[in-house]
Image 1 (cartoon, rainbow, N blue to C red):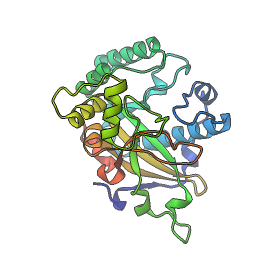
Image 2 (image 1 turned 90 degrees about the vertical axis):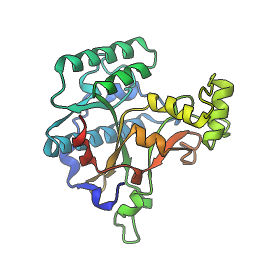
Image 3 (image 1 turned 135 degrees about the vertical axis):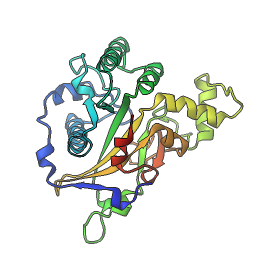
Image 4 (image 1 turned 45 degrees about the vertical axis):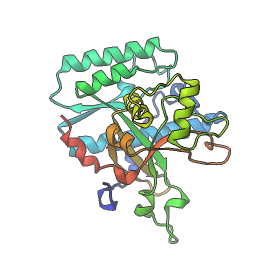
Length: 279
């Protein structure tokens, strides 16, 4: 469980800001999953925020968890930034077999090249996991007014009321606003996606499919651009995430009110230092 004492506060994050290399190409190929009319400036701001969060996490790993390595997807991709990134990076122990790592990277790039949307298969994700190469997502969020107290200070307990988030496998945008629970999501998948309950327990079966589709590790970073501070909240494995997940919408008028998410509370994660225990 994550509590306020687990949050790593990173001061003066201006020193972590990326140079912006390839940002233009990245935003030109960014897929609008739910916010269809995002401006180029909005895409640029969001992309830079995401890269900043990745830089903060990478620096933390290098300074505090030297036995662990993080390899950004941008450093292994072979598509000249022309496709949407399927994940943020790969996390693994430094004692990994280099040939195994290279083989997995080659397979990732082959699948991204051959897939119209730049996705990788559930089968390859499982192969990475079995070889102790963990597909990782680093979610960045701007500190907003709702995260602050009456004195305009960050309230860490309020931050922890937020969630880890992931898109469901079969539907990212609920156009008709009819899905608000796993039961309704399962009904949709049965009717429109050919989903079949093999065990007789539909919830168990759908969660198994969702877990195979997920990244293996989720990192959450909050950024206060005004104060130039970062908040490294913690992390969660895909297994814990899906076990404690719900289907949820995050209403934000004229922005994401129809986006569908798998969600679980941030407190269900663990201190980011637990990454040191991966094999």
